[in-house]
Image (cartoon, rainbow, N blue to C red; front, side, top):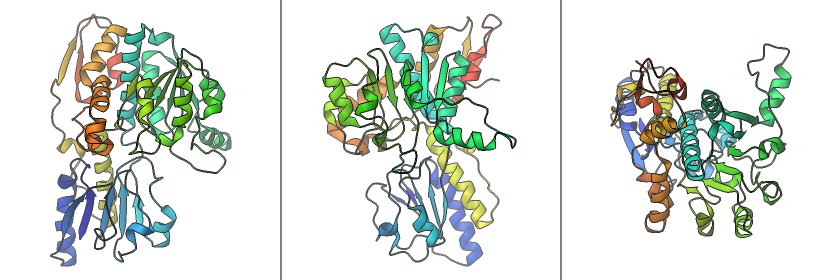
Length: 393
């Protein structure tokens, strides 16, 4: 069995090498192989003999890619979204597909929190006094809302699809009791954080959801954060708004037309990064783990490995806290694990040198809060660090 995998999938060799050997032994096939590839440049010729294809979000999986392959049985995407996958084509060919919903949701939520901590320090903002509007109540929006709840920060969620499902289920053991608001309500919040997939057409499209009309509704003192898909914000309309002198503070991890970037917009951002919000080691590797489990199920093989088998220790694995929790301590904790200013500096200094995709490929190792154990003394009476996701003994 030949398994082709995106070279940017952490621990892919550790997870999948043994599956090649196991399946070869079962089928008497001695030609098993684990083959890495570059996600942006993958061609039909390269994967003509693939039994399994494992991609990330930059690879378009469709008839054009797979038309030379008559043996593939499994496609997996180690990411949340599926807008890069032609699901109808895979279904027509009876090719099993699995994605990894929620794999990097924690990572993205921690990116947003790091951005808020940085901007709060930069502009002397009190985080607990802000309202945060979340567009998208799925895995990522939910993880962000949990961290905001831990910090006592008021937030609102807009998700018309989940609101409709909630209304349909309200008389049949509803599992979602959240209150959803309109997009206009979210756009009135102090912070607007976008966490939706790219959807073109239909009743609730997200392509250019934040357009010139919606941008005109924003106040001068608001913060706009996008860490989902680049096409959700009309970048040219945003540039026009900023060039007119609008004061909205912009944090962009994703860009319309990636890997191309509207360079003129970069100087108008507070924080600019190369679509790496979900690129924590845990976030990327969790996608590998989820596809490993799905492929094991497909092959009727009991999974042998878990992500914990491969994750290294954090550089600073344990912290002792001997004071009450406050915003200054939050600032210190978050930045110690992940300071988004590092990635902003890399982006501004290296984009023209390395290019967008190479910045992502060469992304420095970054950990999630859970990699660090926080010990609280009797005087640190708040368990906020643990509710934010830091580990505890």
